[in-house]
Length: 88
Length: 179
Image (cartoon, rainbow over all chains, first blue to last red; front, side, top):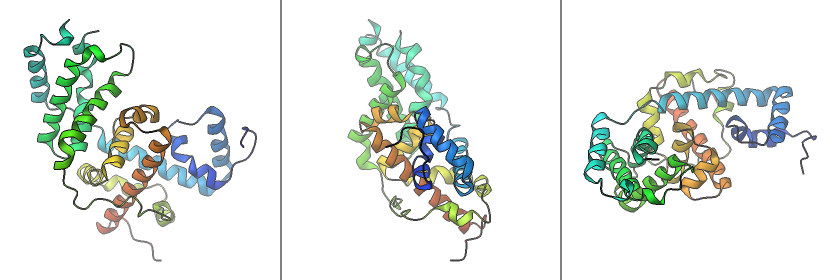
């Protein structure tokens, strides 16, 4: 098992790549992946490509807001339903 | 805290996730409106200080599963297992290792490709990559272990990447590598 001091191989580094990029690894694990990427050019290439992909996804899909008339309808609904649990 | 102050600011999130779950704007608005009403009526069940966004999304997801999922069409669904042993990076590492071809793909094309993912993969990817939820939050909303979130997210991202790569090749944004 890993104690944080051992090297990890490409397979293991790539297996945890998304968790690494998502900031979901423990500090010890993240450091192992970071050290591997530092010395392994092919894995660093994959990492840079996947980073670009995730940034692109975020930029393309996130922007949209709820339509203004939906917001209005929800607010009206809450007013008319105002005697519900939330009012108390 | 009042419902209006705590929950209403998350309407944008609820609407965006509803849109990707339902697949069309009319149903997404109904679903979002219904979610907010249900949440309002059961506000006494919400534990103050816990994650209100995850709580709302859980209500949304249940409404979708119970009332809308059957109506959703499943034409051209993406096969998330198709990516087995294939990585887009291998195909572009010489011609476009930085993934610049992604930038030529317009929003609508990306959203349509997301919409073709199977339900459980689509919801996981949307909660992560559109709304920025943590793995633990996604596990809470989708009611599966964190390990399942990880594997679904991996497959969803890779499958979507493959779809977008195929599209980019088809559009001539990038040349298909000779095998």
